[in-house]
Image 1 (cartoon, rainbow, N blue to C red):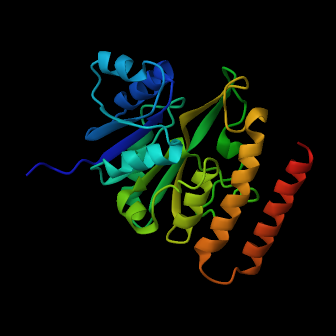
Image 2: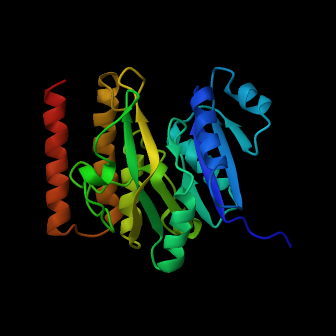
Image 3: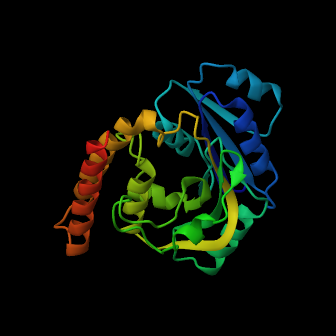
Length: 262
């Protein structure tokens, strides 16, 4: 009987062939064995598929119609065989010890269901002086909406038990933005997070790129913000406590203020 794969790495991509190759190589360089790499080609209109196939990489490629990052990540989850799932955005990278340190944390803390690491922040080609954890203190849960809860967990920095996703569900395909925070909220209602206080991934952001937080996409960001808050309330399936009510009220106020500035 073939032994179970330890970690499945899901990399969604859309028209980012060179950056996707950089991301893949950072996974190949991990100091741990028994990894499967799943690249989900989310309907790229360029030659991403042909480019990746030509590199003879140790990856599984899934091609689908363009449906957004949530559907792409979910397709990767559905086709994974690992006990743990890691996500890596196609424009981000990992340091070689990232997965090893997270597995070691799980082994020492079996009750946690998600482990995230600190992260370098690279803006327009230069690392910021502060890491993500230096900007915001890490926490064991993300109980409030992401507009007011600054728990510094980023998708490219997490490793999750697959059984947790089977229990709480995958990324919401109703959301084009805030889908990560919505999932962290649901997981927080189920169990604690763990975190490694060492920057083991790199988040890249380019001011001129088609980034979801760019000015061009602000309307989508805000519209999805309201959808996210609706889902947050719906998912509780109970009366909100005082902290949650205040978090929702403050989040809606922030969204309204941002809309007025458009």
